[in-house]
Image (cartoon, rainbow, N blue to C red):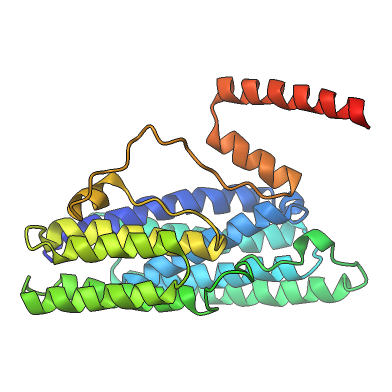
Length: 319
């Protein structure tokens, strides 16, 4: 895989990371209210988790470690009743600033230099130590406050009914790292066969999840086609498998949809764009409302409100 193609993969990571940074920034700026909103807090946890995973896959250890520190801090908030004060917000913002600065340097003309990364990590370490210590002290002082039932589920917990192992995400990440290394090698039949073997291992990790198997099978077929260059394959295959893994980690029952680009590379006619859009809605009202707002535009939401109002009116007559 040439430097131009590798830069494309880094570009995908940066764009995704910037979206996660927005989620983290907004959450931290409203941390006092966010700690009372389990779904929002979980979104922040998942944002840090996704940045950590992408950075690990690309060998960006400084970004990986920084995101991991924030991930641990958000998990602590989900497990403990914490009363947020100005000091805690400041410590979280300082950790966020470190992550943002590292990603900005990665996006710069010279990339993230090892010396700059080391300096940033050395400067940030005392802050993260203070953050963990202060979180512990706040949790100790608030132990008498009961934890609400809505936060009982861990943010990275998958549904028990799924066949995903607890190590699913880390195992997928390790295989993707090996695939990246192979994509950097010459386009030989042997290397393609090794890539296909890794696809088979990926399929085995998600046994019982049909949409995951289909995505990996399409990746297998795309790699098998010698007309598809590594330069074309690498960004598409790596990105889609990584995103699918993150989605399954969040919700093991989610339906994964391969992109038209991957379907084309696999020699499959892309699914018609007229297929109705599907979304996953949780039973908790606030989370369900957020999912609907993100999925529909204003006219659709207006129509939905009318339908719900009509349905509510009818049901009230029966009670």
